[in-house]
Length: 201
Image (cartoon, rainbow, N blue to C red; front, side, top):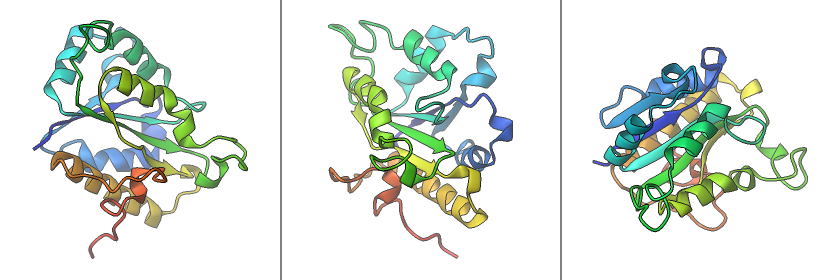
């Protein structure tokens, strides 16, 4: 079974109905380490050695965060800047993360249709996430399309239940090392057949 490290960063987690629902489904699962950065490092003083050890012990790395100004919350950016050191995560001798899988799990207040060339935000979510994709590739990791829950300001109970079910299926698939049906047109892992299935009654 593949081990999963969920690096979670949400400065207002207590106010996020969507993220609380998602996290509740995966944080106590066997083989999943739920790592709440704002809980552990409220002063932004990141324990570099601890983080490196965690990364080394896991096969799959998930950056789980809300979409803050088309990016991640500041503590997650701090984590990337501090932990992914030259000649450890990348560089001539930097192979500590090589061949690990990596992806973003994000929530956005805006609906899916506003993230496109004709929408208010002009660019797709995947375009905004290019720095994460390039970071993963620089570190020799396999970067997967994001899992995204969008339109959270108006999300219905039914849609939220569907997304939490999809998140569970995503974790199952990652733990089992399954291959996703990803094509060049696959924007989100939510869209893959492996994840996008109707919950059993």
